[in-house]
Amino acid sequence: MPQMPPQPPHQNPQFRPPKRNNSLGYVLLIALILTVVYYLFNPQGATEDKRAEEIPISQMTAYYQDQRFSELEIKNSKIYATDKNSKSYFAVRPEGESLKDLGFSDPENPTEIKAISTEAAAFWLNVISGWLPIILFIALIIFMAKQLGKGANSAFSFGKSQARVYSGNGKKKTTFKDVAGMEESKEELVEVVDFLKNPKKYTKIGAKIPRGVMLIGAPGTGKTLLARAVAGEANVPFFSISGSEFVEMFVGVGASRVRDLFQKAKRNAPCIIFIDEIDAVGRQRGFGMGGGHDEREQTLNQILTEMDGFEKETNVIVMAATNRPDILDSALTRPGRFDRRVIIDMPNLIEREAILEVHVRDKPLDKKVDLKKIAQQTPGFSGADLENLVNEAALLAGKNDRKKVVHQDLETAVEKVGLGPERKSRRLSEEEKKITAYHEVGHALVGKLLPKCDPIHKVTIIPRGMALGVTWAMPEQDVHLKSVSKFKDDICSLLGGYVAEKTFFGEVTTGASSDLQRATAIARAMVTEYGMSPELGLMIFGDKSTGSFMGTDMGYSKNYSEAIAGKIDEAIRKIINEAEERTTKLVSDNKALMDKIATALLKKEVLNKEEFNKFFPKTKKAKK
Image (cartoon, rainbow, N blue to C red):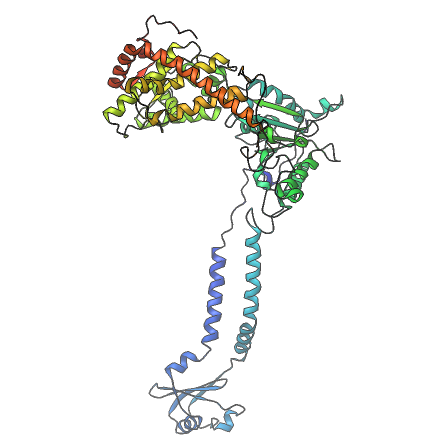
């Protein structure tokens, strides 16, 4: 592939034009203005007038004839004189009168007469005083125009694209080696990279460059990182912009920016345009308050036209990222615009370990650090969560004046990121501690005895985040499907704290509110979303419309009758009541064991997995 021509300076991110130092110019301009103002209000002779005594012209003539002056100075309309005692006088010269007419031409008078003409200075003074306001006004307009021309949101650059341009030849470019995991996603993009590197290889057999690639994944999974890696691998210019940067308060500005962006991209083809959070402008059309004149819809229409208009061979690939593919307009996601969808899932166990290895490259690790064990403790963590975890561990090591990050730092960081920071300053009374201990032991005991619950990793009564205590259950492997029995066991585990309080103290506290909320949400999803209710059959109730501009809550459609709504409530109540009965029986049958575990928890405040399992040497999982 022939070498690309060098990028112009405005497209090179490392090029920075030297800043001009205009401070000297401002100082000179201010000095000029002050000088002009000084001379306007202090004309020539004003200083001499303050030191000299004003006398009538007739008296000045008489003193001259008496030879009392040593010298005379004639300055236009004034005559200045100095006597032999160095005293100064001045008199106003009558207009049109010559020195001879006034009697100052006696050849025998020894007084020295100097005639100083200031007519030229007076002329320029008049010119400056007349034209200076006009010149200053014009300069002010030019200065304001230049200031308005600067900045991204100026009045003269509304229609210009605000995309950041990154050259593929930069020193700090991202490649696929910097992207851990996501092997299937990277394979999907290899063809795009190869096409940008060797376009003739594909055009010879009639293949066309993909118009667009949509990166779909949860927040923090690495969509933007993957887009940068594609640009780095292909060594082509990379135009990056957020979907929200197209939209302004003026209608038509977003469409103008889209046109400008694609024009720049075509001039630098082959290249990549990356639109992050495209759902900001790509929502389904026809639901906005502005109708067809809505600014967002105008911007989307322009994007659709640019991606699949009359102009075909442009060698410009559009990459977009979103975590809400369900709300995008169907015209945007059809083949011909976004031909390829790349799904980026949450990292699995192997990928989490690889991501951790990437983020610990520049951090000194202790030899005993087991990244695989940390990866096992972080199911459901995204790439961004893992990066934050490693950073928190490094901060903790630095806080304790350690030169290396030890395994305990990483485990503490896992708990901090997953559960929230410890709040040891929150003081609990002895009664509150006891209630919290039995509450958490109730969760842990039920979770331990039921077969489908995740293994208990840690139980603590040290407040974390908003909770007074935490029971941390962690799956042994990544789970992608959940069964009815799994949901029912999880509901029982959530009700364990509520039932324990009711069994041991005769009443319940507000500490069970979040547990009840989560249990109800699971039961409702079983009935309305997963068709797991025998009474209501294989039906899905409720349609979450994604087109409403006001959000998902306002877009929820109730597609069932009031009679069905009552049956849904009854089905949810039945699931909760059955779970409560199972949980109550488990807690009642193991009261002595709960007392023993709660006593140990009150003493230690924290029970890890090994310490907790010691209380169940031969305990078998309870049957359903």
